[in-house]
Length: 154
Image (cartoon, rainbow, N blue to C red; front, side, top):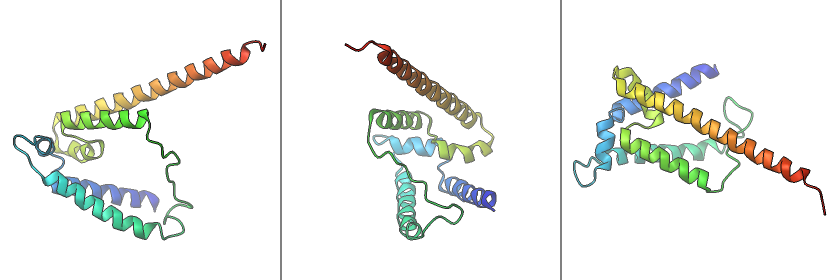
């Protein structure tokens, strides 16, 4: 049953992206072109999504748990740090340069053009690079702690 629910939600999201025109990178890029061919429709799509989400959260969080889980899985980290800001900046630059966002590019794969596939490939490479970078930072931190612990005490 859970796989059907996930499929239905993904299908609804994809249809929303297609119907709203957000699978077309030119439409998204025109939103960012404020001095030229500005198209405010992205703001209306985001505003509609925000309104539906705000109303939905009011109902959902009144429930003791989600329909298909024992508890809500909410983020524990609430700090705004360099990693969050940097990731948001990279996301914004990628979106502004390509016209695709990670969620919206999935339905765009179905239009048969190469641009969405190239974006998805770059996205996967970027995620792998970020994971490798995090692993190397974690290993370096762990190594530094081991060296510190091995120092003789005075």
